[in-house]
Length: 323
Image (tube, rainbow, N blue to C red; front, side, top):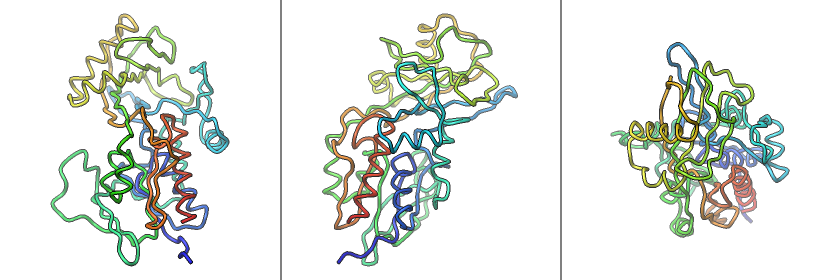
């Protein structure tokens, strides 16, 4: 007879990790949620800056959310609002920024932010997590040895597939080989005057894949006209390792070709998302080894939409609970 699942660690507090953690917690499992960021959300991110005494906000990751199934539809009905600028689908956004939605979903969970998990070890009493403070992608590993947390009866790894592979047992990690995820450069730019474009634009050609007037989304309080512009996968791949300071003016020039003459920029920055758009998913709801009580989830399991991440995290929780 298997031992009941009493404790679990979830690595990653994006949508997949939040869905998994909430489902486990609702089943009575004591969940500890680790994330390298300062808050939950992953690509459901909002960057807030102040320039010239003006407060600006940019949803520089996921621009909006849609639902096709009842589970995620309930999430959006509860924690998001309609954004009518996307005319061809029922788009929802968090308010006053996209980051508000994951914050709401993380409420009540034992979230340990600013913790980079660097290793997992299976011991007699359960899984031990080794972790450092902060996001190691932003700088070198600290000199001191990693801290340990646990033991946990189960572990759910809910991070991009390339970051999950080093944490998983070899057999599970090998299953990730077919997965392909494209990067995306995002431009964050603010103006003192309107740009003559609709609130949401999908260019048909060129380096840009998306442009949106973020300050026009519901509930926004930005004190200038704020735009987020996403480069397409091909352009992002060819420029992936360049510095953000070099990429930002090139994206601004591409945006000017789309919009015509632009007002002077009040704020200009670029952000690189290494794992942004799922191109070749795993083709299964999640990865799991029931005997070891470890698994992985993410949008990379099912497809490019945010709902895929939610469904994958939910599926992983069910698999761990049934192990």
